[in-house]
Image 1 (cartoon, rainbow, N blue to C red):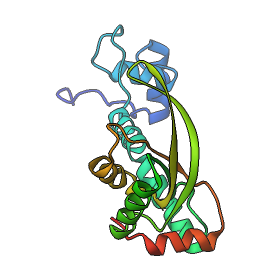
Image 2: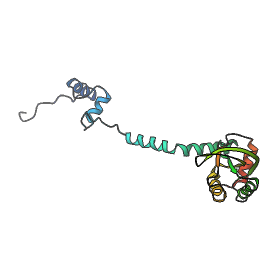
Image 3: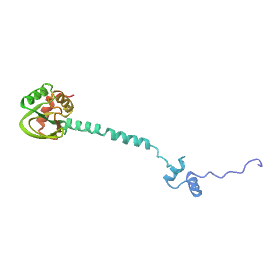
Image 4: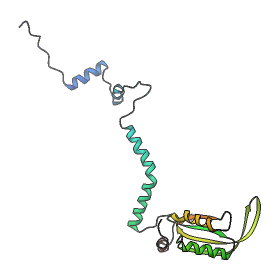
Length: 192
C-alpha cells in the first residue's frame, strides 16, 4: 500500500469551521463586520446596505403622493360617512363700484353657474391706497358661495368683465357649516 495516500481525518462540521476562522481572525464576530468584509468599497466610502435605493425610492414616492393619497382618503371617508370635507367650498368676496354693477356681475356669475348663491351687501365705506394715494369710496360687496375648484374660473371671469383695473376677488375656504346647505351648494355648482 505504498502508493496510497495516508487516510484523511474526518472533515470538521460547519460549527467547527466557523469557530476555527474566528480564532484565526478571518470571520468577523458581528453582522456589521461581515458586511464590511463582503463590501468591495474602501472603508472610507462606506458600504451601502442592500435595498437602500429601494427604501429611498419608496420614501420619495410616498412624500410626493401624500397630498393625492390624503385627498383620496378624505373623499372615501366622506362618501362612506356622509361627512363634509373641509375646504371643498369657498366664499369669495368681490367689491363693486355701485349697486347696478354688483347686480350685473352677480347675474353673470349665476348665469355661468359659477356659484350657488350670491349676497349683495349694501354700501360700505372703503379706504385704500391706489397709485400711492389714499382713496376713500363707497362700495357694494358680493359674497359668492361656490366650490373651491371654481375660484380660478370665477376670478378670470370677474377680471374680464369688472370695470376696476384690479378688481378684488378674495376667497376663503369653508371649514364647516350646515351639511344640508353645503350639499345644496355642491348640487347647484357643476363640477369642473
